[in-house]
Length: 299
Figure (cartoon, rainbow, N blue to C red):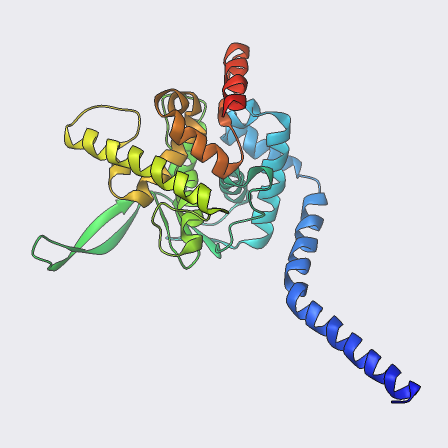
């Protein structure tokens, strides 16, 4: 092989390598570049006003959490179409309030976004759906349900704007404990690995085993409590199935972290590892903060 042939072969294989690398890494790099550009943009003053008016609890979060929520919200708004249903006209208020609350599940590099999310559908209020349900004999029957939210594995997040507004306004109330955006966003995370089953993606076999143990114990305890008609922190709706238990527990983790950590410390710790955050530290008194930090160091 003469020198010219060798050079031509080298150029060919180098070009092929560049092409393969671009094909493999091009889309992820392009997405990362686009998201970085969105995050560099300033958060519009009108959007800050929306959070101040609609979500008073936002001001109680630490500054770094507030900044992350705003930047993640900007990415979600830039990448996700919001569609009004039943005649509802989508506004920036809706986009910002929904996106910022959903971003609570994306803190500290846990994820750049919701991997499968394609659309956010917003109804003015609760909406009606028909579902086929099998009876004890296995026969299917259509039942009508009124919902505040729903998540589809195909990437649709469906929300009642009235419930979004109510939950955000009452988030500072330590007894409220509900948030439809967080609930349905948790389902979206769950559905990234397939049908919702209460087992979101975890990085190691050890984490998956620990998750299964803690969640199944807490879920079984809730089912027993509900069967005995006993009161408790976790809403009875969480006993429906493991997917609903995960979503309800996530709501409590964000909205009532002190109560969840006190009543179900192992469950709180699993969720804190999953979401790479400890809401217990966001709004607590100095005494509780010191206690929580000491507890975190002991694990």
